[in-house]
Image (cartoon, rainbow, N blue to C red):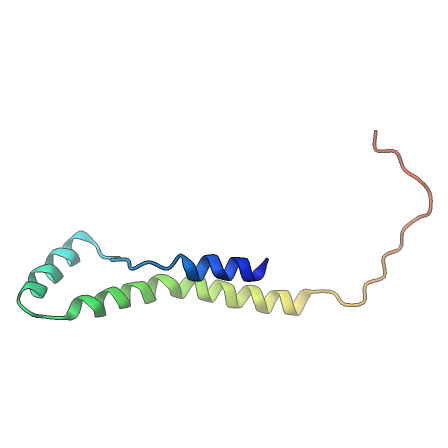
Length: 84
C-alpha cells in the first residue's frame, strides 16, 4: 500500500506555474527581454507551498512515535454478546 502511494505521488508530478496574475505579467515581460527569473520565482513559490505540509508531516511523525503504545494487553471477556 505504501509503495502504491509513493508511486502515485511520484508519478503524478507535473510542471506547475504557481504565480499570481501580477507576478505572471511581470515575469512574462521580463522573460521576453531575456531575463531568466521565471524558474527561480516558480521554485520559490513551490517551496513556500510545500513547507507547511512538510512541517505538519514532521509533527505527525513525532506525535505518532511518542504516543503509540507498545505491549498493550487486550483483556477480552469470554462471554458472547449480541449486536441486535
